[in-house]
Length: 257
Image (tube, rainbow, N blue to C red):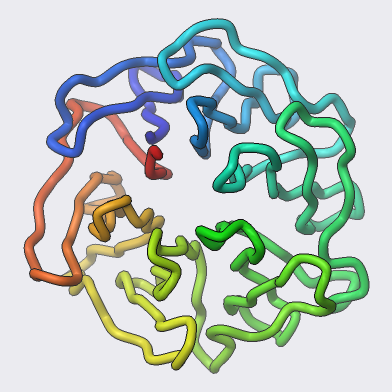
């Protein structure tokens, strides 16, 4: 899954890793972005209503359904592994904070109340495969780092919270690693906190927005001269390749299960 800016409009698409068999899932004139998919349903952020709201659409295509209806911005959704809950961001407090709701948008509630400080920013939730934990970005320690929230178990704990900036985490399907971006793509072992560099951007290139696939490969975005391109790498074999759906700016890849 990814969002793709073509002919002046950003919509949600799905495609095989070689960029073929591309299917367009949304076609509204408002920008649609940040897709997430589980159990045959895609949830995404749409700006068609003037502010950011969450919508859903079947992964095979079909009728789109609005899930949220507030004056705040709801963004960066992440469906739980069983497809029953959505972790997302809302800026109803003035800055983005992590919330959760049911898959139909009902029963919204904050997940990190009392964590950090009023102005600390949260972003990019990603679920552990067991559905019991979330990794997300927070500036609670002064700069963007990664934290793990165990549902129902108190405050989040640091995963990568050193002097560097770590953003855009994606939990691996086997639960052992979290991929993240810090100019290049890295992985961190959840148990040992060992960090390994996986991509090696050269010159003006910047790598970001990693998404770990079911087979362990990582799809990510490389900006070349300011233009985003989808690429993939395999941490196990060091193989790498390009995803080429066609002209346009493709971003925010997400795995399908």
